[in-house]
Image 1 (cartoon, rainbow, N blue to C red):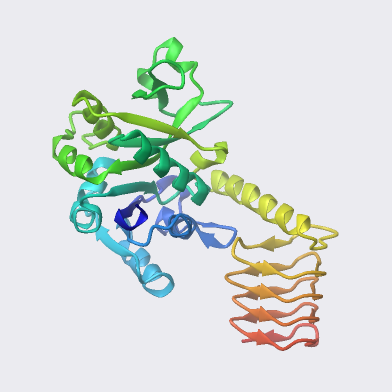
Image 2: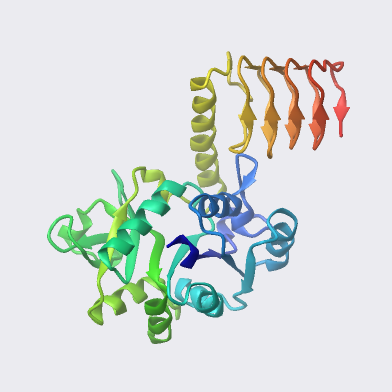
Length: 340
């Protein structure tokens, strides 16, 4: 079933409130662009055919992918006319990669949607015979999100109702749309040309595809992610900071649970792809990023910065900087050494 699946990642946004001269999807969470978090989750779920829809400063996204993940196809949304319009730009990709299968649509600025959620949502999607399955999350405060309205409690999806259009009863619903969907590709390709832009913004919304499929008598479902973080994104640098705090704490907890000694977390930043061996100690001010791999029995820090490095067993790195380098076991360079 995975072989007939592909994914379309929506990454055309400017993110004006970020007030940064870069595409929003390249904003980093734990020193890793949000777009790469999304790509990695899709790949970990077993989806190999990926298409990223680019727009604002698309040359930068193209250049990033060419260097870091050249297997990802890109298509340009020259005029940004909404999420439905963005998926229209990827119609040929969907047609050639999943005509008789399923297509996953993801937001390029939602880094915490996990591979396990993607897989389980697809399993439900196929088992239920749905034309579309919305990935949802349950929030304590759903304000601002589109509500998932089910038929009869936990039944099939009946509608996605936006905050401004919701009744009092609908506003009380805490299950919300994450903006990620599994579509049966054939149904999506059939319904895309029917989406209209008759709204104040003059945009084509992907949620209208869900409404059109329901109106056509197609079956729709919703799969609730285990974590409310699945819906989290960032529209400004304050929200980006919040994502970094969530991700940093989760990574530090994981490593400490695995036996890594981090006696004081001040200034310690460890990227999501870093691997740390047994009996290691990480001291304040240490930053580890990229696909850095640390051997057993190492002490890193204080103030050590490594990016994409491989460190052998028993190394002691005090105030050392390294980029894309390999250190033999037992290496103990002098403080303030720079390694390349």
